[in-house]
Length: 324
Ligand code: PMV
Image (cartoon, rainbow, N blue to C red; front, side):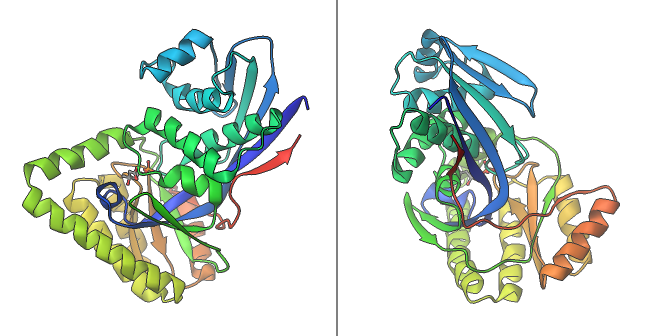
Protein backbone atom coordinates (compact mmCIF):
# COMPACT_ATOMS: atom_id res chain seq x y z
CA UNK A 1 0.00 0.00 0.00
CA UNK A 2 1.41 3.41 -0.97
CA UNK A 3 -1.08 5.64 0.81
CA UNK A 4 -4.15 5.51 2.98
CA UNK A 5 -6.91 8.06 3.63
CA UNK A 6 -9.00 8.02 6.82
CA UNK A 7 -11.71 10.41 7.99
CA UNK A 8 -13.23 11.22 11.38
CA UNK A 9 -16.13 13.42 12.55
CA UNK A 10 -16.27 16.56 14.66
CA UNK A 11 -18.65 16.80 17.61
CA UNK A 12 -20.75 19.02 19.80
CA UNK A 13 -21.19 18.58 23.52
CA UNK A 14 -24.93 18.81 24.25
CA UNK A 15 -24.54 19.17 28.02
CA UNK A 16 -21.91 18.56 30.69
CA UNK A 17 -18.80 20.41 29.45
CA UNK A 18 -16.54 21.57 32.29
CA UNK A 19 -18.42 19.53 34.94
CA UNK A 20 -17.19 16.43 33.06
CA UNK A 21 -13.63 17.37 34.04
CA UNK A 22 -14.75 16.89 37.68
CA UNK A 23 -16.20 13.42 37.11
CA UNK A 24 -19.80 14.31 36.22
CA UNK A 25 -21.43 13.01 33.02
CA UNK A 26 -21.49 14.77 29.65
CA UNK A 27 -23.30 13.89 26.42
CA UNK A 28 -21.98 14.59 22.94
CA UNK A 29 -23.00 13.82 19.36
CA UNK A 30 -20.85 13.35 16.26
CA UNK A 31 -21.39 15.80 13.41
CA UNK A 32 -21.64 15.24 9.67
CA UNK A 33 -18.60 17.57 9.35
CA UNK A 34 -15.46 15.45 8.89
CA UNK A 35 -11.72 15.81 8.41
CA UNK A 36 -9.66 13.62 6.09
CA UNK A 37 -6.02 12.65 6.56
CA UNK A 38 -3.95 11.03 3.84
CA UNK A 39 -0.84 9.15 5.03
CA UNK A 40 1.94 8.17 2.62
CA UNK A 41 5.62 7.27 2.85
CA UNK A 42 8.49 9.73 2.36
CA UNK A 43 12.24 9.44 2.79
CA UNK A 44 12.54 10.70 6.34
CA UNK A 45 10.85 12.72 9.09
CA UNK A 46 7.17 13.36 9.67
CA UNK A 47 5.69 16.05 7.45
CA UNK A 48 2.27 17.50 8.27
CA UNK A 49 0.50 19.70 5.75
CA UNK A 50 -2.86 21.39 6.33
CA UNK A 51 -4.53 22.66 3.17
CA UNK A 52 -7.05 24.70 5.17
CA UNK A 53 -4.47 26.41 7.39
CA UNK A 54 -1.97 26.69 4.55
CA UNK A 55 0.72 25.37 6.88
CA UNK A 56 3.40 22.74 6.52
CA UNK A 57 5.99 21.47 9.00
CA UNK A 58 8.50 18.60 9.02
CA UNK A 59 9.48 16.98 12.32
CA UNK A 60 12.74 15.10 12.82
CA UNK A 61 12.87 12.12 15.19
CA UNK A 62 14.55 14.44 17.68
CA UNK A 63 11.63 16.92 17.41
CA UNK A 64 9.14 14.14 18.09
CA UNK A 65 11.09 13.09 21.17
CA UNK A 66 11.00 16.72 22.32
CA UNK A 67 7.19 16.73 22.11
CA UNK A 68 7.15 13.57 24.20
CA UNK A 69 9.07 15.54 26.83
CA UNK A 70 6.27 18.15 26.65
CA UNK A 71 8.39 20.71 24.79
CA UNK A 72 6.82 22.84 22.06
CA UNK A 73 8.20 22.35 18.54
CA UNK A 74 5.50 23.65 16.13
CA UNK A 75 2.48 24.43 18.34
CA UNK A 76 -0.26 24.10 15.70
CA UNK A 77 0.69 20.52 14.81
CA UNK A 78 2.46 19.12 17.89
CA UNK A 79 -0.58 17.20 19.11
CA UNK A 80 -1.18 15.59 15.70
CA UNK A 81 2.54 14.87 15.33
CA UNK A 82 2.59 13.13 18.69
CA UNK A 83 -0.42 10.95 17.84
CA UNK A 84 1.25 10.06 14.53
CA UNK A 85 4.53 9.29 16.30
CA UNK A 86 2.71 6.86 18.61
CA UNK A 87 0.95 5.24 15.62
CA UNK A 88 4.42 4.87 14.01
CA UNK A 89 5.47 2.94 17.17
CA UNK A 90 8.00 5.75 17.72
CA UNK A 91 10.03 4.39 14.78
CA UNK A 92 11.87 6.86 12.53
CA UNK A 93 9.81 5.95 9.44
CA UNK A 94 9.33 8.78 6.90
CA UNK A 95 5.62 9.70 6.84
CA UNK A 96 3.76 12.45 5.05
CA UNK A 97 0.33 13.53 6.33
CA UNK A 98 -2.06 15.72 4.35
CA UNK A 99 -5.04 17.17 6.20
CA UNK A 100 -8.26 18.50 4.73
CA UNK A 101 -11.03 19.44 7.12
CA UNK A 102 -14.61 20.71 7.10
CA UNK A 103 -14.50 21.18 10.89
CA UNK A 104 -13.82 24.78 12.00
CA UNK A 105 -10.72 24.91 14.23
CA UNK A 106 -10.54 26.14 17.85
CA UNK A 107 -14.32 26.37 17.96
CA UNK A 108 -15.21 23.56 20.34
CA UNK A 109 -16.19 21.20 17.52
CA UNK A 110 -13.42 18.70 18.26
CA UNK A 111 -11.32 19.39 15.17
CA UNK A 112 -7.94 18.61 16.75
CA UNK A 113 -9.04 15.22 18.10
CA UNK A 114 -10.74 14.35 14.80
CA UNK A 115 -7.50 15.08 12.92
CA UNK A 116 -5.43 13.02 15.39
CA UNK A 117 -7.88 10.10 15.19
CA UNK A 118 -7.92 10.18 11.37
CA UNK A 119 -4.10 10.49 11.26
CA UNK A 120 -3.63 7.51 13.59
CA UNK A 121 -6.13 5.40 11.63
CA UNK A 122 -4.55 6.25 8.25
CA UNK A 123 -1.03 5.45 9.52
CA UNK A 124 -2.13 2.20 11.16
CA UNK A 125 -3.85 1.18 7.93
CA UNK A 126 -0.76 2.13 5.88
CA UNK A 127 1.33 -0.09 8.18
CA UNK A 128 -1.31 -2.83 7.82
CA UNK A 129 -1.39 -2.81 11.58
CA UNK A 130 -5.16 -2.25 11.87
CA UNK A 131 -5.45 -0.90 15.38
CA UNK A 132 -8.87 -1.45 16.93
CA UNK A 133 -11.03 1.57 17.78
CA UNK A 134 -10.15 1.50 21.49
CA UNK A 135 -6.42 1.60 20.64
CA UNK A 136 -6.96 4.50 18.21
CA UNK A 137 -8.97 6.47 20.77
CA UNK A 138 -6.35 5.82 23.48
CA UNK A 139 -3.47 7.03 21.27
CA UNK A 140 -5.49 10.10 20.25
CA UNK A 141 -6.09 10.80 23.94
CA UNK A 142 -2.30 11.09 24.33
CA UNK A 143 -2.25 13.67 21.54
CA UNK A 144 -5.13 15.54 23.22
CA UNK A 145 -2.98 15.79 26.36
CA UNK A 146 -0.41 17.67 24.24
CA UNK A 147 -3.15 19.98 22.93
CA UNK A 148 -5.25 20.56 26.06
CA UNK A 149 -3.37 19.50 29.19
CA UNK A 150 -6.11 17.56 31.00
CA UNK A 151 -8.69 16.54 28.40
CA UNK A 152 -11.73 14.57 29.53
CA UNK A 153 -11.43 12.21 26.56
CA UNK A 154 -14.75 13.17 24.96
CA UNK A 155 -13.30 14.46 21.70
CA UNK A 156 -11.06 11.49 20.87
CA UNK A 157 -13.88 9.08 21.84
CA UNK A 158 -16.57 10.68 19.71
CA UNK A 159 -14.21 11.14 16.73
CA UNK A 160 -13.42 7.42 16.98
CA UNK A 161 -16.86 5.94 17.64
CA UNK A 162 -19.31 8.54 16.21
CA UNK A 163 -22.99 8.54 17.24
CA UNK A 164 -24.24 9.67 20.62
CA UNK A 165 -21.93 9.24 23.52
CA UNK A 166 -22.28 9.59 27.27
CA UNK A 167 -19.05 10.14 29.07
CA UNK A 168 -18.56 9.77 32.81
CA UNK A 169 -15.34 9.29 34.81
CA UNK A 170 -13.57 7.90 31.77
CA UNK A 171 -16.39 5.44 31.04
CA UNK A 172 -18.12 5.71 27.71
CA UNK A 173 -21.64 4.59 26.91
CA UNK A 174 -22.33 4.53 23.19
CA UNK A 175 -25.74 4.95 21.67
CA UNK A 176 -26.56 4.39 18.02
CA UNK A 177 -27.80 7.65 16.62
CA UNK A 178 -30.96 6.42 14.91
CA UNK A 179 -32.82 9.70 15.27
CA UNK A 180 -32.20 13.29 14.22
CA UNK A 181 -32.05 16.33 16.48
CA UNK A 182 -33.26 19.76 15.28
CA UNK A 183 -29.87 21.22 16.16
CA UNK A 184 -28.54 24.64 15.14
CA UNK A 185 -24.83 25.47 15.60
CA UNK A 186 -23.66 29.08 15.68
CA UNK A 187 -19.97 29.90 15.40
CA UNK A 188 -18.81 33.18 16.97
CA UNK A 189 -15.50 32.74 15.10
CA UNK A 190 -13.77 33.90 18.28
CA UNK A 191 -10.90 31.46 18.74
CA UNK A 192 -10.21 30.32 22.24
CA UNK A 193 -7.86 28.14 24.18
CA UNK A 194 -9.56 25.20 25.92
CA UNK A 195 -6.57 24.66 28.21
CA UNK A 196 -6.77 28.25 29.51
CA UNK A 197 -10.52 28.18 30.13
CA UNK A 198 -10.37 24.80 31.90
CA UNK A 199 -7.62 26.29 34.09
CA UNK A 200 -9.74 29.39 34.87
CA UNK A 201 -12.57 27.15 36.05
CA UNK A 202 -10.11 25.14 38.17
CA UNK A 203 -8.81 28.37 39.76
CA UNK A 204 -12.38 29.38 40.57
CA UNK A 205 -13.05 25.92 42.00
CA UNK A 206 -9.96 26.20 44.23
CA UNK A 207 -11.00 29.70 45.32
CA UNK A 208 -14.65 28.95 46.12
CA UNK A 209 -14.99 25.16 46.40
CA UNK A 210 -18.23 25.32 48.44
CA UNK A 211 -19.87 27.51 45.78
CA UNK A 212 -18.47 25.96 42.59
CA UNK A 213 -18.82 22.30 43.58
CA UNK A 214 -22.65 22.43 43.88
CA UNK A 215 -22.82 24.15 40.47
CA UNK A 216 -20.80 21.33 38.88
CA UNK A 217 -22.95 18.74 40.66
CA UNK A 218 -26.12 20.42 39.35
CA UNK A 219 -24.66 20.31 35.83
CA UNK A 220 -24.18 16.56 36.28
CA UNK A 221 -27.80 16.12 37.39
CA UNK A 222 -28.91 18.28 34.47
CA UNK A 223 -27.05 16.01 32.02
CA UNK A 224 -28.87 12.92 33.35
CA UNK A 225 -32.17 14.73 32.71
CA UNK A 226 -31.01 15.93 29.27
CA UNK A 227 -30.07 12.39 28.26
CA UNK A 228 -33.55 11.11 29.16
CA UNK A 229 -35.21 14.03 27.36
CA UNK A 230 -33.09 13.41 24.26
CA UNK A 231 -33.70 9.68 24.09
CA UNK A 232 -37.45 10.11 24.63
CA UNK A 233 -37.51 12.83 21.92
CA UNK A 234 -38.75 15.48 24.40
CA UNK A 235 -37.02 18.44 22.70
CA UNK A 236 -39.02 21.00 24.71
CA UNK A 237 -37.59 19.66 27.96
CA UNK A 238 -34.13 19.32 26.40
CA UNK A 239 -34.31 22.99 25.32
CA UNK A 240 -35.22 24.13 28.85
CA UNK A 241 -32.27 22.19 30.20
CA UNK A 242 -29.92 23.78 27.64
CA UNK A 243 -31.02 27.24 28.83
CA UNK A 244 -30.34 26.33 32.47
CA UNK A 245 -26.97 24.79 31.50
CA UNK A 246 -25.94 28.02 29.77
CA UNK A 247 -26.75 30.00 32.93
CA UNK A 248 -24.60 27.66 35.00
CA UNK A 249 -21.74 27.78 32.49
CA UNK A 250 -21.93 31.61 32.48
CA UNK A 251 -21.63 31.58 36.27
CA UNK A 252 -18.28 29.82 35.82
CA UNK A 253 -17.15 32.68 33.57
CA UNK A 254 -17.08 30.57 30.40
CA UNK A 255 -19.39 32.64 28.18
CA UNK A 256 -18.48 35.49 25.84
CA UNK A 257 -20.48 38.53 24.60
CA UNK A 258 -20.60 37.04 21.08
CA UNK A 259 -21.91 33.73 22.43
CA UNK A 260 -24.55 35.56 24.45
CA UNK A 261 -25.50 37.66 21.42
CA UNK A 262 -26.11 34.55 19.28
CA UNK A 263 -27.91 32.75 22.12
CA UNK A 264 -30.32 35.65 22.73
CA UNK A 265 -30.79 36.16 19.00
CA UNK A 266 -31.89 32.53 18.65
CA UNK A 267 -34.08 32.73 21.74
CA UNK A 268 -35.83 35.72 20.15
CA UNK A 269 -36.53 33.43 17.18
CA UNK A 270 -38.28 30.99 19.53
CA UNK A 271 -35.78 28.15 19.67
CA UNK A 272 -36.57 25.69 22.47
CA UNK A 273 -33.27 26.40 24.21
CA UNK A 274 -29.69 27.53 23.60
CA UNK A 275 -26.29 27.33 25.26
CA UNK A 276 -22.58 27.57 24.58
CA UNK A 277 -20.92 24.28 23.65
CA UNK A 278 -17.41 23.12 24.52
CA UNK A 279 -15.01 25.17 26.58
CA UNK A 280 -16.69 28.54 25.84
CA UNK A 281 -14.93 31.92 25.81
CA UNK A 282 -15.82 32.09 22.08
CA UNK A 283 -16.20 29.13 19.76
CA UNK A 284 -19.68 27.77 19.18
CA UNK A 285 -23.16 27.73 20.67
CA UNK A 286 -25.98 25.28 20.02
CA UNK A 287 -29.75 25.62 19.98
CA UNK A 288 -32.60 23.12 19.70
CA UNK A 289 -35.48 24.07 17.44
CA UNK A 290 -38.97 22.56 17.42
CA UNK A 291 -38.24 20.51 14.32
CA UNK A 292 -35.76 20.23 11.44
CA UNK A 293 -37.72 22.62 9.20
CA UNK A 294 -37.68 25.37 11.85
CA UNK A 295 -33.96 24.74 12.45
CA UNK A 296 -33.28 25.18 8.72
CA UNK A 297 -35.40 28.36 8.48
CA UNK A 298 -33.64 29.96 11.47
CA UNK A 299 -30.19 28.96 10.17
CA UNK A 300 -30.90 30.39 6.72
CA UNK A 301 -32.22 33.69 8.14
CA UNK A 302 -29.23 34.16 10.46
CA UNK A 303 -26.71 33.31 7.74
CA UNK A 304 -28.37 35.98 5.59
CA UNK A 305 -27.92 38.44 8.49
CA UNK A 306 -24.18 37.72 8.44
CA UNK A 307 -23.96 35.26 11.36
CA UNK A 308 -21.93 32.09 10.86
CA UNK A 309 -24.43 29.27 11.28
CA UNK A 310 -23.41 25.70 10.62
CA UNK A 311 -26.02 23.43 9.16
CA UNK A 312 -25.01 19.79 9.39
CA UNK A 313 -26.47 16.37 10.02
CA UNK A 314 -25.40 14.22 12.92
CA UNK A 315 -23.27 11.20 12.16
CA UNK A 316 -23.64 7.65 13.44
CA UNK A 317 -20.24 6.94 11.85
CA UNK A 318 -16.91 7.37 13.62
CA UNK A 319 -13.44 7.03 12.11
CA UNK A 320 -13.25 5.10 8.85
CA UNK A 321 -10.95 4.34 5.93
CA UNK A 322 -11.94 6.34 2.86
CA UNK A 323 -9.50 4.77 0.41
CA UNK A 324 -6.09 3.11 0.12
O1 PMV B 1 -14.21 23.24 23.46
P1 PMV B 1 -13.75 21.85 23.42
O2 PMV B 1 -14.37 21.05 22.34
O3 PMV B 1 -12.26 21.74 23.48
O4 PMV B 1 -14.35 21.12 24.73
C1 PMV B 1 -13.86 21.30 25.99
C2 PMV B 1 -14.76 20.57 26.94
C3 PMV B 1 -14.32 20.67 28.38
O5 PMV B 1 -15.27 19.94 29.15
C4 PMV B 1 -14.33 22.11 28.86
C5 PMV B 1 -12.93 20.09 28.59
C6 PMV B 1 -12.87 18.61 28.32
O6 PMV B 1 -11.73 18.13 28.13
O7 PMV B 1 -13.89 17.92 28.35
